[in-house]
Amino acid sequence: MANQNLFAALRAAFPADLDGTAIETDSGLHYSWHDLDRATAMVANLLQSLDVPKARDGVPPRIAVQVEKSVEAMILYLAALRAGFAFLPLNTAYQSGEIEYFIGNASPAVVVCSGRNFPWVSQIAFKAGTRHVFTLNEDRTGSLLERAAHHSDRQQPAERKAGELAAILYTSGTTGRSKGAMLSHGNLLSNAVMLKDYWGWQPGDVLIHALPIFHVHGLFVAIHGALLNGSKMLWHARFDPKKVIADLPRATVFMGVPTLYVRMLAEPALTRQQAAHMRLFISGSAPLLIETFNDWRERTGHTILERYGMSETIMLTSNPYRADVRYENQSERRGGTVGFPLPGVGVRVRGDDGAAVPAGEIGGIQVSGPNVFSGYWQMPEKTKEEFTADGWFKTGDVGQQDARGYVTIVGRSKDLIISGGYNVYPAEIEGVLNDMPGVAESAIVGVPHPDFGEVGVAVVIPRPGATLEPERLIDELKARLANFKIPKRCFIAAELPRNTMGKVQKNLLRDQYQDLFTA
Ligand code: MLC
Ligand code: AMP
Image 1 (cartoon, protein in one colour):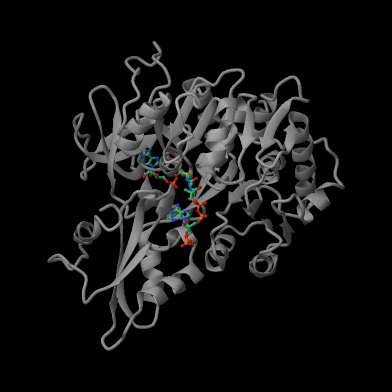
Image 2 (spheres, protein in one colour):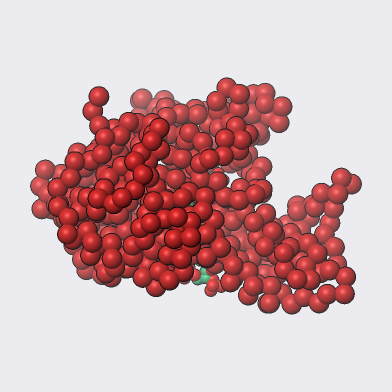
């Protein structure tokens, strides 16, 4: 059977003219397809030259990467696939305690970090038994590329089967620590191939890439989409609404979390004329408010296509790209919904008792398909809990599917806040707060926010006799956790509201602070 390494499929889709531009960056750099091919070969050869454990039982060596967004960081991802390593991307906002957990849990053979963070990251990595730590900086310096420069620019992609591990994405949990979702070459490729057709990727498409590349949206959906279509990317190192709007006349596809759309709408330069060349605007990772959906249509003449996915499953549902006879009745992009189950993806809604609920009624969303991950890294018990007996994955999202098939997400059974497209698990922050001196207990709730959609608010109860200062608690949290997890406000209270069972009534706290940022 042919090699099912995801990189091999992406490479096969490169255009015949390898001298054409594959990527143009916002700092004026141009990369040809040939450059991508050569650079990924060199880095893959470096990785394969290292003394690391060989793949065993479909489990290859892991490479954990915490670096700023750059084309070279993307090349490193592709090179890891090419060399047959499993890629473990880490948000640049993560602090040492968070990194220590990920490295300790995944025991990567190789770690790559920025030169600035090398002193502490390497210490954590070496302590965890990692033998190889490289640096990679935004300006293309660092030991990774220096070492790769000594390797050949030709390389045969490692032989991989569809079920073999390609990436581990850590996602936090409602209880306990983060879990590593194991995604295979087949999970990633099947989803990308299906989306290429469903979203109507066509010759000449150009993608504006303005998302971070350490989560599903920017790393998989955007990059695989462009590469599999042989499409050029206009590469933005960080999201700047003005710069994206300026690039619209040269592009056809844009992907963003709702916050990016909200920020672009605040720019007078966003006009119908400026967006005239665009073919498709896609939103996901967090709920898109109907006002944003409507305002965007009014201002640009384009209807945003909203889709729904997860780290564990990649893309699950999507509003339609076009009226297509193959996808009967799927003609309208309906705001407030996440569209239809994607071809090949099973979506069903179940009640608390596990029974099917009638169309239009609310329940837990369960999914199945070739895109669904195989389980959490070294957590068989957790994996078992999250799947039904008949093999469907319980997303933790609560929603409904109407008679026509449109899926709407109405809430979450998991205690999760999605802030600017990043997941924040209250339990993790409460755990850190509760360990601070003078803190008896705490609760974090999500409330509406005009920019981030939703943000966390902390309510903290002091121990008897203790005096707590909200600013001090926030500063302490900042030293320990990624910045997007930090509650935007902190209140000290005498007690938390509880029901008769003694359970904290977060809904009452949410109601209390509902208008904090939107009044
Ligand atoms: C930044 N800040 C945030 C935040 N991002 N606060 C809450 N939520 C966020 N998402 C805070 C910082 O802590 C800092 O606070 C201040 O804002 C400025 O930081 P910054 O880094 O300069 O912010 P900015 O560059 O403006 O970033 C905002 C953003 C970014 C929206 C561009 O958050 C972003 O790129 N989000 C996209 C996330 C994403 O890709 N998600 C996909 C997940 S995949 P202070 O106090 O320190 O000043 C997934 C599956 C799927 O969910 O379906 O796709
Ligand atoms: P992550 O674990 O970071 O992959 O986040 C996945 C979660 O993001 C899902 O379980 C949903 O709760 C949420 N999500 C993704 N896309 C959407 C969307 N379009 N609307 C609402 N929630 C979404």
